[in-house]
Image 1: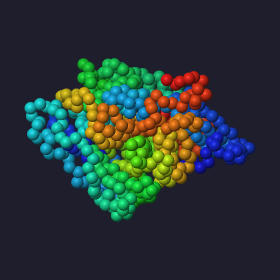
Image 2: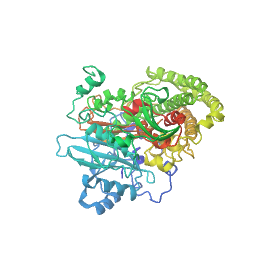
Image 3: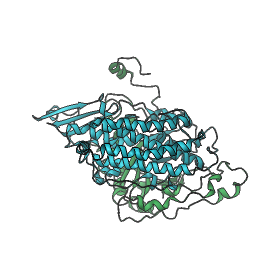
Image 4: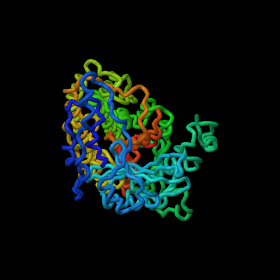
Length: 239
Length: 380
């Protein structure tokens, strides 16, 4: 599981830092738990404290040598959480990967709300850290909508992801995490992704009448809504 | 959350106000909004029935700019988001990119980063305390707070040449070694600071006017705080003992002993107390760290051209205002494919409506102040 505490002193350290002055941060975990929900810390335990191969061989001669290990890349993930979710959602759970020790679960956009509700109710991911989107214009469904979740009882992060095409909508998760209200408004503002069931889906950072969605890849960095700028600011260009 | 919104888009009959209701605009230019924030209040006499924050006046498209800069070139931009805590912003970004690269800063760099970031936390809280007190009508603390903040800014200036938008850290470590006498100066500041803290407390903590203006104002329960994604001192004042420095340690925080102060009532007074206690804890961290700065290199060997392998990473740190997260996506080129900033101020500000309902107009400035927002970060 993408358990950040274990990331701290695992493999990627350059050899010079492997002197062992750090203590594993695990000890702090109980103190940091805000409430006493029943869920036991599952997948957190078997994380390896240090990767053996890197420091041993190349350490001595040149201390600040670059970390010569395989570059980080996404690998398939299969842990208890993924199995539980697979059993529950079947093929709607498209893919589970581990990228830089962070868990990413790709689900069908049609069951986005259902998965969110499940993560909140059953898996105790009670805090929606962030919700945003990424644009991949060459892909058939161009947007990644993603939600970074955190569980206070488990001290664990999880990223839910879904592919959404242009002009397609995705369900709003405001009913699960109220914080999603402004986050979804921002994603709508910047990417033009409509969230169905959102109580108040309007632009949030840009003016209401603005045309275009700036964080889409086909929106040039110098581009702007010149008509709006001319009318409201009384100048020809904001540049 | 908000079912009865005051918007221009509503049908005409919905905007008809009751006999005693008025709509009041605060901002965008208002001294106590700490920047260009506009708050639309719906009032019944003096009492707030509904509120709406209108933001975006300072939107500069930082996330878009990131996609057109190299990883290193974007680093100075992050200082311009929360410009009163630029060092913390830099730490979050640099560590996120390091994670993406699979590299880590050397121990010496991590400890120096920790010291500077904690000093920045004190400076940020001091600015908050001074202006928050000023908003509520206590003029004096501002001068005391700025006196100490000046000492911290002098340390920054000596270290990297800049006081506010410091760009103190680099991806992979630090650019500059600490200057001669750095340790002594930090130590001297921390030693003096303890008594200075007592002075603020004397001015405010038992001041009847201060207590009257802050106790029981802007209450946020712990359940609401979690549901609204609130982090940082605002969350802890609601009684949730959670701090990323403890939960998922980064930099060198796992080496130091410190406590997480929490409040009980989740009101403006508790948030004040939590931030004061946090400053004392930051002071302790600095003292511990400065005692034993490991020697060694300050920069990891990561090369001059950064091309992180394709993939994505989220990294969150405990900035003075709450969880500051960077979600960085790489497509294998020298420029980030996407940088998403999870700004604590933006998300904490969303809780304003919950805190303000039922309060009086005069409390609005107290509530805006207590969330500790920086509009540069809200709007990005």
